[in-house]
Each structure stands twice: as C-alpha cells, then as structure tokens.
Amino acid sequence: MAGYETKVRLHIKPHIGGVKLCEVTDDTLDDLYRLLETTPCPTNKGKPLGAKSVRHVHNILSGALGAAVPKLIPVNPAATAHPPTARQIRAQESRYPTLDDGQTTRFLGTVWEPCGNRACDGGLTYHCLRDAPLWTVYAATGVRRSEALGMKWSLINWDAGSIELGWVVVEEGNTYRLRKLTKDGDDNAVIYVDQSVMNVLKWQRERQIAERERLGSAWADSDLVFTRDGFKLYRGEAGGPQDPEKVSARWRTLRTRLHLPEDFRIHDWRHSRSRTIWRPGRTPSRSPPTSGTTRPATPWPGTGTHVRTERGGWPLPERADSACHPWSDQEIRSAVGHVVGHATAGETENPS
Image (cartoon, rainbow, N blue to C red; front, side):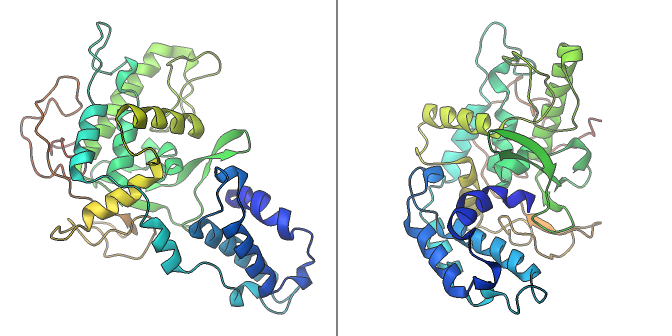
C-alpha cells in the first residue's frame, strides 16, 4: 500500500475512514466515487478528480476490502460497486493535449541545441543540455515521470536495446524517495527502444562520468541514469535521485519557452506517442504498443520478457550534424532513428 498512500490519505480516509468495515456497502463506495467526481479537490487545482483517478481509488479499495474476505466480511462490496468505466476514462483522455510528428521533431531539435556560450562544451559538463536526455526519453518512450527518474544503469541491456523499469522516484508529502516499482506485479516491466535512444543514454552516461569526476567527494553514486547533478548545488550531495517537483517545474519553464500547449504535462507524452504510432497508414515497428500496461507478448528475439511499450515511428528532421550532439560521431543517418527522429543507428558500445 506504500505506493497508494497519497490517495488513501487524501481521498479515502477523510470520507469513509470512520465507517466500520462491516458497514461498508457498494452504495457507500458509489457515493464516494460520485463525491470525488463532483467535489473540487485542492490537490487537483480545485477541480474534481478525473475518471482515471477515481478508478484508481476503486482499485485500492477493492484490493483492501478483498483482503478482508472472508475473515472479517463475507463479500467484497467493491465487486458490485460502480466506479468510472473504461469508456468514461477514454473519453477524458481524448481531451489531453498531444503533439504531432512535426511538433515533436521541432521540440527535440530545440532541446538539443547548445547555448553557444563561450564556456559551453556541447553540454558535456555545461548545464545547457543537462535535461535534454531526460526530455528525449519521455518523448520517445512515454514512461511516467517517476519511472524515468528511477531508471538504473544496471537495468539497461545495451545489446538488446531494452530497459527494465524496476524503480521509481515518488513524492511523499513534502519530500521524495527512491523505491521499488511494484504496481506492475513481481516482474519488472521492460521497454524496447531504438538505437537512437540508446545513443542518447550513452551520451548521458558520458556526461554523468564527467560530472562525477568534476565533483569528486560531493558525488554519491546511486546507479541512477537521471541523477541530481552539480548545477547550483548549494547543499547535500549530487548523484542521488532528483526531486520530481523540480523536474516538473523545469518542464513548465521549457513548455512556456517553446510555446507548447499550456496544459501539456510530462505525462501527456504518453498520449502523443500513442497517437503518433496509431495514426492511419502508420505501421508499428514490432507488435502493437501497450502505452503503459504490462501484458504477455511475443518474446523479443532472444528474450522471454514482457513488453510494456514499443518503438514509435517519427520521421527524421532536416538538421545538420553538430559536434555537441551525442550522435555526431556517426557517419550514416538511417530511418531506424524512428523515436528520437534525428539520431543514427550505429552499434552502441556498453559504456560500463
């Protein structure tokens, strides 16, 4: 239940926390769901909870009440309750802002543009490109904010082009922590990415090594791909997990600077990515994507893993090579660079 603490504290306990377990009925739960759908929520910018969030509350209650059957209660009242349906959830998701291929290509081209400052070394140690790999991973894979921040080097398979999602960085009250990802079951979810994304991760590894050497004892290694760096490091150590809220704040600043839709969140890359892949006339590069839900799938060649997301299909933009970019040492551009759209498809060496 550790991962559901926020919803339990904010949306369940205040309303039915005082009701005896034996007195909870399906009508009790239905009243709670309708209340959450219509009552302004202070933690949701004064708006009621969306259908997906209410459904998540239902799932939490269903699991908790199911654990009490049959020792404490004869049946699970959540089994006959009426939470928001899948159709209602989809109807709300369709209103989320998305970016098309061209907008995504321009976005990636801009975030990889070095500042040109005299001190700039192409982003290797200078701060101008510090978030470019992180934004690229969000755009390319559609992973959640917490999942990208919890990615670990030891869970990247450089030969297979796969990344295991075994950890997340989550907010807890006024702080945050790194914890095991448990919501998808016992097995880690696995995503497969294009060679272009692996090249970006290789560049991120080189940048992290340079940062670690520069900071010396102020660096505490955590095996994380996207760590707290030494930029404006006033106290504490670099190398640990990043504050998710500060990542979101930097995203909002970037979103304003690039004139993206003002309500376009990091999470909305999931919807943009799905629309890009499923646009009429476009064929996914492997089996259909799942956009975030683990499912049994035809194993990737040489593996027996579950596939959670798949590769997208974004076109290459018209951009000249730059010595500042992680793919500048590649000689041949190829259409294999679907996801990032301006990467190459050479062999990635294991940076470890």
